[in-house]
Amino acid sequence: MDGMHSQQHWPARWASKPFLYLTTVGRRTGRPHRVEIWFATHDRRLYLLAGGRERADWVRNLQANPRVTVELGGETHVGVAHVLEAGTPEDRLARELLVAKYGRTEGSLDEWGRTSLPVAIQFPSLSG
Image 1 (cartoon, rainbow, N blue to C red):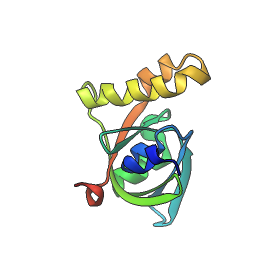
Image 2: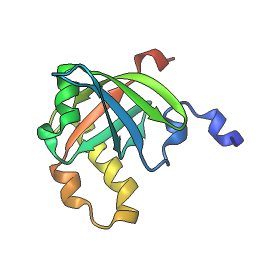
Image 3: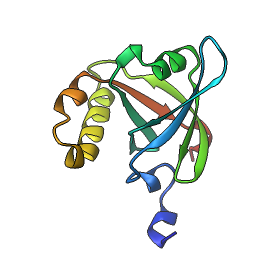
Image 4: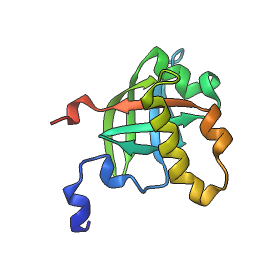
């Protein structure tokens, strides 16, 4: 690992990775539900966009149980996830960050960025 990475906190030091693994707890089964998903980081938070909005299984799971596990950059951390309120500054930030990160390689993501449901994950145990 180069010197620059060691200066940054998780998850920021892995911000350029193409995806992370998110594990939610199944709302009916209680079993782990793991998905590979795009993400962006800001201020020690992770942001995700659900193209399927509330229909996405992982979104419904985290609404029932906000405790999630994130695997990124060889590290695994437990976080607390929540859907962002529409029209808030954080809602806009999440959309902008993800479209900026992936739009360069994936082509136009304007509609995805506009219509997806943004989710934030915080890591209370990593503060400080």
